Image 1: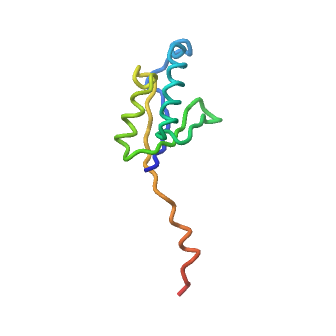
Image 2: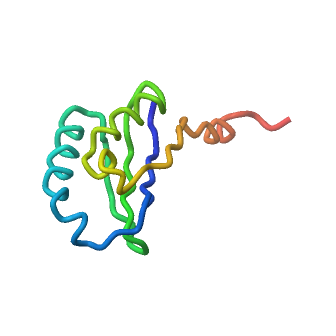
Image 3: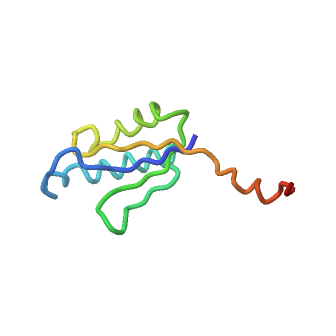
Amino acid sequence: MKILAIEYDVQENTPEAFTPYLKPEAAKVWDLYQAGVIRELYFRQDHPQAVLILECENTEVAQEYLGTLPLVREGFIAFDLVPLKPYLGFSRLFTSQA
């Protein structure tokens, strides 16, 4: 199942508070990407926020994986999870009109 994960801040902090965790965060994201858990990752252009596409069995498993990220584990950020399903609207193009 594809899951959209949208980051949000849990607490306000200075950029310096995040600094010790940024390299370990990038390393863990890389591990999850290499494992096929994180399929796509972006930063929003309009807001300092990460947006991830995960491939997991369900949102509970996705939350467990995201919980291994240092910034999540330390309580700086969390993610809203949105389970996705395929768009089936194209089938309307191939049905006969009554």
